[in-house]
Length: 355
Image (cartoon, rainbow, N blue to C red; front, side, top):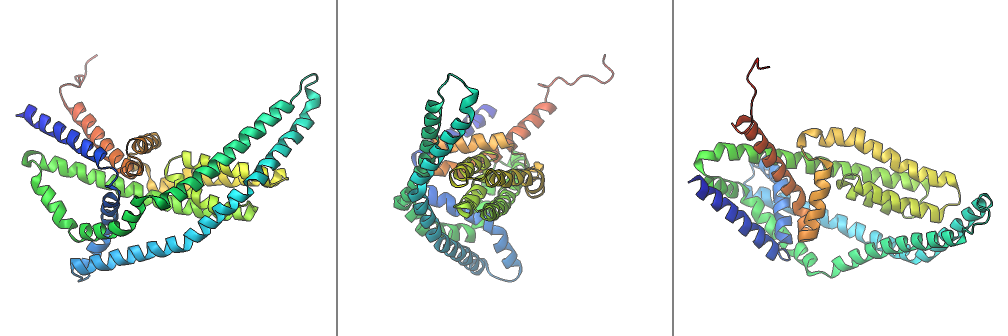
């Protein structure tokens, strides 16, 4: 019987993964709608306690959420597109500035390298720096332009609110139905693990969202005060991608430093840009993440980075959306398996008093 159950669950998992992979191009709005419903369900529960029916509570919460989201996008999109277009126009000038500064640095150190011509080094360094800057700008503009043309974005705008509404309205019915399908012998154990996954997701996603928002505001304000071109856009973008531990900050720091070198002639201004990112990293590592996310969520930064990269490679943007939930589930199951192993005869417990 145990072998049959194991075979059944393994086959079910394989079929689920296969369907997920085959349908990955159409699942995005449905996964997004489910995610919205999951995070808005506590608000609907609160309104129900205040006397609203589930349908009315769902209508109010869903409408309010998507109206706010649409307003944010409508206000931010023109600014973002305009700044990206301006950045593209300025890239050739930035590349020339970087080349000039590399040549100037070479002229300063050339006397210390008698008999050696460093001009080729300066030329190659400037070429590589310019290529990197052009590549980053082309990548960002390509992503923005590409996403606007992809049918998935249209489906997100049209289908996601509908899916979110129905999932949110029937959330309790869906969870009760799934609960009724669970094997009765292991139902308490499964419920405990589901609650652990729920706690992990809530702790990480809600906490990390606040961390990203605060960091984005800090970086945008700091770079604006320094006077860096496109500092507000870069600051908020760095904050948003900071949900990828360390990686997000390093990307923002690299782009910011490149822009600072291209724009400023003063080493003080360039140093101030570096200071802004250094303070932001300290703020994230020692204040925001410990207080808002905490270590109890059990998601190690390396595990998060791996899951995001693996999800993106296998399933694209859908995989990125599913990466953290899947990482949370796997992490909870691994911790549960280790706990069960330590309690089992497979683990050799030494007898008390044994030498």
